[in-house]
Length: 115
Length: 120
Image 1 (cartoon, rainbow over the protein chains, first blue to last red):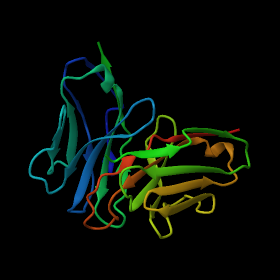
Image 2 (cartoon, each protein chain N blue to C red):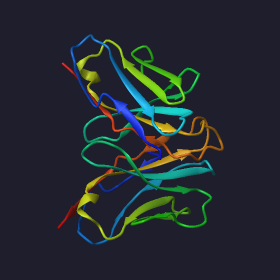
Image 3 (tube, one colour):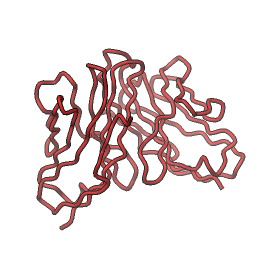
Image 4 (cartoon, chains in turn brown, cyan):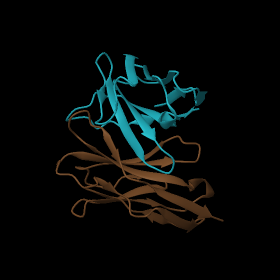
């Protein structure tokens, strides 16, 4: 079974609107971390936001917020006030805290922001 | 803070040659570094994890004799693709973490800009 599932291969949004990118995860580990990364066409992976499994509040970083619903095992990324520069591939990732704490990535969602 | 560089950004080589890719953490000491491979329009696949001063841990299906990893210092890890073949052509990307992996590790991985390898 996939550990990280991103069901939206592509998403379109108009500039200045908000968009939600979906991510569900599967783990039996009580302690884990969830990450979102942005990958523009240049290829670099840009860290956006982190949510720990024991965090009581949803993480926020500027225009990015993470809608963490632990019981549903979902960690959706919300981008408010989309900008043209937000067009990129977005990856959800999970680290199960054990071993070397490696990251497992979802397949990604391509976001296109139109004027 | 948390800047990771990779060199070279692009490399084209002939089949059978070896290619070395460097990954450096510029403003922090990286106890753990990770090497990923990404094919076009696909996600990142972890190849190996290396902790400074110890042998790398390779993921299942990754040939350790073909992809040599050396984590020589707290700021430098290298990936050498030995006897490269066209099927090794891919985007290789490293990441670095401040803390050693383990049950209490919650550190973020910071990624380098990647290296695009083309083997002719």
